[in-house]
Image 1 (cartoon, rainbow, N blue to C red):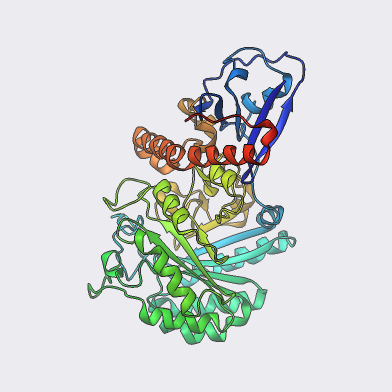
Image 2 (cartoon, one colour):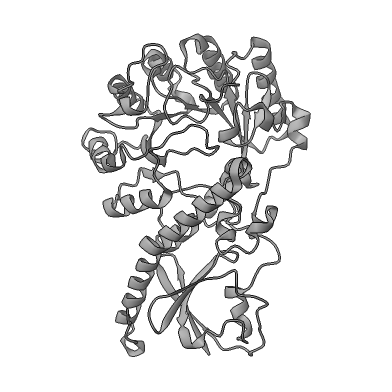
Length: 473
């Protein structure tokens, strides 16, 4: 008999394997194997989404095991199409189609880390009235063909709330009112005070604002106005946000964490708690991480997923309206340690991100009617999936990019979780991307995962004293 202590939902779940000794693995090279002590090993199988502890004396490399052991150390015949999220979030994804309208790629800021505005080929021309009409008419036709779908509209850019976009924004608001659609707006927030009256007037249609404040005191280190060169401090933005959340408008304020503000996270949470933001059901604070997916911004102040997770673990933030939006390869293991890990990204376990998974029906549409799937590709014509039309929408198949797309990922020890990494990074420099993913994953294992697993094992034996075996460091 083999005892397995599976790591799941923040605890160790015991499995006793006593089936016939008839399973012999073809290989164990895809497994991550880490000694926790002289007596115990932690084994992680990224391809089956299994991580567990077993006694070293029961481990026989590629020997013969009870037949049930295949479900822990086997290699699947195809990538896992499993989402470790509550059923309601999965159902919501299947029932919703989101149309994200980029009225133009022009922007009034030049943030140092911006992956879009650094593109010299970015077409900043505004969407024509004719093209906007076509977009809205096509959405209407799609709804008529799919009456069971919940339609959600978003505005994106560039910066959608430029003053010159006002007429089009109001036109889209009126369209959403007429069709009973909710709307989301991703904005840098600079012109929210200008649009404040409009947002309040249309508040009844279900508006969500997604904006960014990187620091309460040092926005000038990352966010610059393209017109004046002065920083965007956000004091008037904060006043506007306070007004919006009290008019029943949902506001998500996200902060892009890097080296200059990682030590300010706790102060930011405290500020929002003490000043009437957190505690209001319409306010959410998101913690993200600066990225350079295509290795082109030259931004050198980034932090890794593990560094940010480590900081958040130190802070132990318990406010339910604080969430995360940055973890990729290590996400599944974060959830094994903490089932309440506050990142609600919907993707199959064997995909790197939501954009590489066939799980969210999201279409970014720009002024030239090009449609994009991944946020990091929006505005790059080479990555247009198709020209926006009802026929092309109906024929489009969502991607499902997994470790099977890269031969070098199919037996990598973290292949099932990383699944080839970011497609954009891989295309530019696969070796650089791969090296960074492996390095950060190993750092996560050494500094966060294995220490926590060892503590869980010690607690398990403390609660089951009759089974206790001394752990030797």
